[in-house]
Image 1 (cartoon, one colour):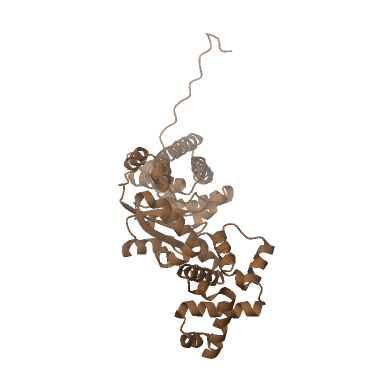
Image 2 (cartoon, helix red, strand yellow; image 1 turned 45 degrees about the vertical axis):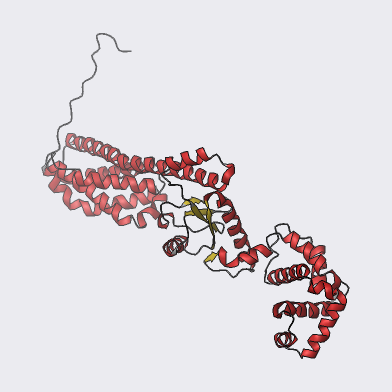
Length: 424
């Protein structure tokens, strides 16, 4: 316990570092820079990839400038630190962008200071420098490292603040996209408010794009007015207005190798329909029904989408329209279904049917008599029945392209086998 008679111990302030020391330090810089880099790699393994990556040379240049500026300040305490400060801020920005914490950066500076101090001790012995001078050097060195941390923090914090702001803006834009997709059910005032807050002018028309899972999307390549949601299990994006050539080219660049379907351009309130159709087309592309390219235009497959929009209902329609064929053998069914397709395609011209089926016209006429006997001539010629049967045949032909059944509600195996036996 300190008594009133006890005076606190007073330390003599450390003196300045003689500028002559700068002359001794300069030749040591190249090897010291290498040694600091090796020590950081050894002590912080997670930094190795970062140091060897695209920022490696920039970081090395920063370390060099840090040491050069220190030596210059030893020679002239008024020497400018502007170049060092800018490079340290850049280093802080790189650390933030790479996901490292500021603690990692601070640890790197501390390692650099320890390595430099270790070298200074060897130099001190070589030149018989006094202990007080070495203490002054150590004090100046660690004070210098504290400066570096603070200057680097400026760049680090600036990026973090910008990142948080960007994330907040993206969250707002995702909320806006979800409200737009809700259509008239979403409060119009809320949509307008979010649009104004995010600086997104409400368009009259929009085009939705459905993306394959885990898309490789280069967000920076997209137009700034595109709304994106990659957090949804079925990722998607919205393009204001129609998909013109420029928008299409931009989308191709941004998506790289990701499969996507461009929906129809619709009024803003119908955005949900555009996305629904695009997702259906994407599912059909994944099953092989629609020929898949990098960017699939939904508008080229509208009839296919319509025919396969409700697979379960198509199954029921097929059972009813083709029920008269159920009792035939598999070979008979296949032949008559093939003939029935040709009949619909040629509108009943026996010669054209024969050419299409590679058969003699008499054989075609024989098959048609069988079909009329099985279905009844009136049923085949009735416009409504004819349209329904042709739709079923087209849907089943599309289904034959599928690598997997594109049913939202998959049929049980027994039902599926029954279907194959019935409709071929």
